[in-house]
Length: 202
Image (cartoon, rainbow, N blue to C red; front, side, top):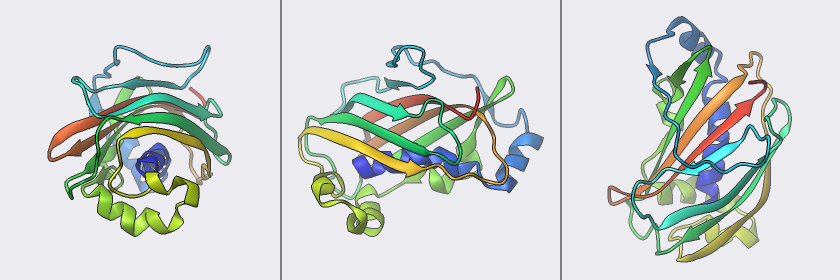
């Protein structure tokens, strides 16, 4: 679970750093614009640009109970650190049907654009357990092994502070991002998290 969240927290910095993507989004304004939806309950620190909310509409077994990201706003060429708590009320990832999907909305001017339309390969993992075996398992610190492999057993998991570098691309796009991560197993939603954050200046 930690590895999936880690991948998606950083994904938004990857999907739009492609110069061709930035060009496409600038010339296609209005093509993929959507009405921005504000989740009902936000969690944040005072005067923070970073907000998060659960977005599941029914009870789910995977629930984020705390989340912290810094710096705020996030800056190119600097580290990003995050930590949190996840409660899992039943075993997850016991089948090959565990999947994760990301929706990244980026604000350009007054309009919101769906970044994943341009880079869908970064936004969908159709078999999380297989992905973790191939990409994550050999890079996981020993003390985090329960969070880096399937199945995820029922319990309360603390994500210690993890730090990654945000690359400094040739062209940067500052602004506000709205990121929704959805977990499903056997085509049933088992968790949903919505995050709003600022990259550069907002």
